[in-house]
Image 1 (cartoon, rainbow, N blue to C red):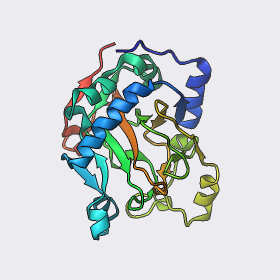
Image 2: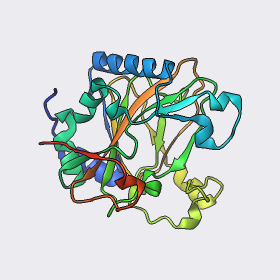
Image 3: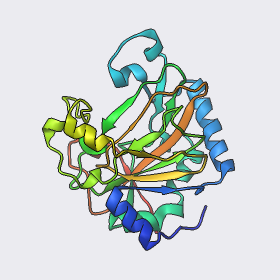
Image 4: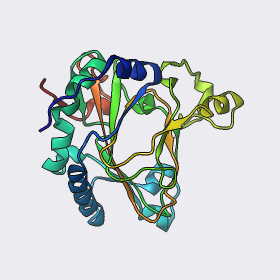
Amino acid sequence: MSTSITLSFSQIDTFQRDGLLYLPRLVDEERCRLIKELAQVHLNYRVEPLEWESEYIGIENEAYRSTVRRLRQVYDRDIVFRRWMEDPMLRDALRVLLGDNPILVLAHHNSIMTKAPGTSTQTRWHQDIRYWNYRDDRLLSVWLALGEENAENGVLEFIPGSHRMELSRGRFDEKIYFRDDLEENRELIEKRVSFRLSPGDVVLFHAKTLHRADFNRSDRTKFSFVYTVRAADNPPIPATRSSAFREIELPL
């Protein structure tokens, strides 16, 4: 296990201002290789639970029905995945950014995201918290690049500061995606940023930070590992999906 990193005051300010923080070269490439190779095995053998492209976009055709979008519930799949999610490397940083001890959430994300060449689809602009149910919004996600992530294969894009904005319901469609056909939204989308990621790079982002990703135009599947934590004093609302899965306390 790794020793915990300490964020600078500048990094803390950046996260509070932008709702995201880029941490390059945080995880060694050998560990990323091991995680990615194991994920490839689970993908090859279609080890459930999975999310399919057809399930995400609601279009039933053979290409989308046979294309995996993510490996779900990775915490319980293998100790290799579990060890990364429990690694103390980010423990102090997460505690500072959340304002309380971090609790590992298994109900949401807890996934290895895959974007297959040719048959992957766009991830539209959204806030993760649109389908999460907690007392408040002190949740953030940890995104680990397991390979190169760039404009060609569907790198994540973010709208900095969107986690602090009061966005009316009318700026979202019926599925609570941020509408890109509205002029006021397009002005905000023009401020988007992205990071060209290499294996071992990490991005932390707030549950209300608007983000998206394009489809994969390259000839290789893109693999990314994402998990979510909440503040210890921000419990899930009873009788919702957020409360339907166990959670993992991360000792300091």
